[in-house]
Image (cartoon, rainbow, N blue to C red; front, side, top):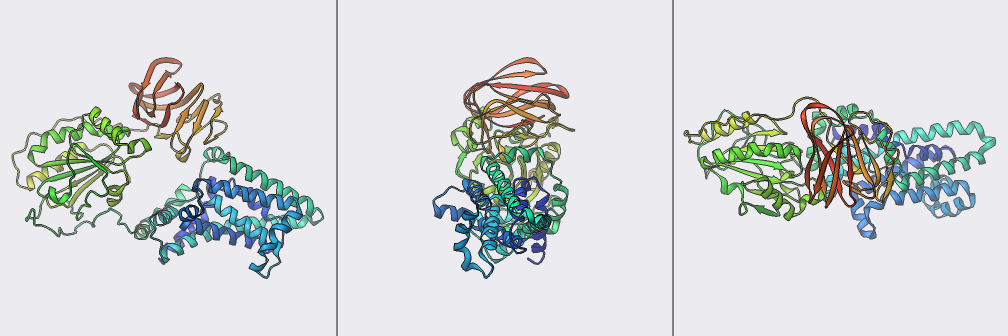
Length: 559
């Protein structure tokens, strides 16, 4: 904890450099213009209090109040609007601040407005954060909050409050030189705060934030992504960085296969078992203890992931070639999108894709978390004793993986193996347009003039787009992970790739236009990945898609 507390404080401090500061900055500036020199401290105290409280116990608190947590930012915005009114109408300020007099010997106007203002800021500022805050919220989500988690969350909140305190002090120092116009400044600050509250309530700030580049990533990586921080955050979450023992750990249970597997590979210790699996396809339920004596390849995948789909032919080839010799492949299907939780959808995809090896449905991320996995696809190669001997993340290196499979099979005593495959590695190389999410939760490189969410909105396409950027046109309802097409729905994207794929759900037709030329229609008949561009060579292109109403669009991937 000695190491993690200053890291958490620094991580909170640098949130002032993120685009999430945009909607709250006017509020802090306006809040510091009134009151005495103590008011900025009251603002900071309120921010720290609610920020810490709702990070650690927000889900429980909203549940107890019978309110959905998704309304947190709206509640904060309403509170900010009320406080804006108190700046514009002095009588409203007196009415609001009087009940808070018992909390301090400061005169009520300083604490009431200042503390409540900071408390409201804590509600709307909670979503801003990086790995430290993510670790704290994951611990809180699992209801395992201890003293260390509270201290780390508090350190993060204090770090986030320091820039707010300085900004409020700065605005107060400037406005004190205009005391003759104090009432006008107070009313102006109230109007500014009211506008900011309206922006936050309507979600308009989300669109602006996507257009403002964040300068924080290199700094955040240096503070929160270094080895010491990663190790401490893993301890805080109660997980190991790899999900299993460190290299060199000895195998502890050799009853099923008594001889150590000497394959010249690192031994990362016991593999976690399949955990919280909701259903199995192509096989009865499995566990690793029943697979002792077998070489097991655990493949984390999801059926709408193009990277996973490009891996499947190699997995099928190895399964056909080496399953008779003792190789077992288990595809752990861990969903990325809501529709991938559905057993019927996964069963249909497994049948359509020709997957013949066992598939475990990891809908609750139990096995994913047991391995501390972070990637689709990811392969973990387990020897006959149940020890992890190799891991590979992403596509590629197929010949290396096959070589290690053969090595473990031979080390287990099977020397009569079929000839190794001659499969060509078709993993895309070089720069491509990155994966592009269409829901507001992970939106990036979005160039429409406004981003309006959670209700139908008629978007206007911009005149031009830079490479890798995209925009909505026509009516869309943009949710956190998908957008649903309405009347005259269009989507325009400038890409650099050989192929483009989009995850869609629903029923309807998507018309594909590339560089101004119609390429045909894609019939959407269910939730899966659809290819909309396939061409020779990697090149720039302007993609336009025209949707019939009722189709859900989730993300683009490129090859």
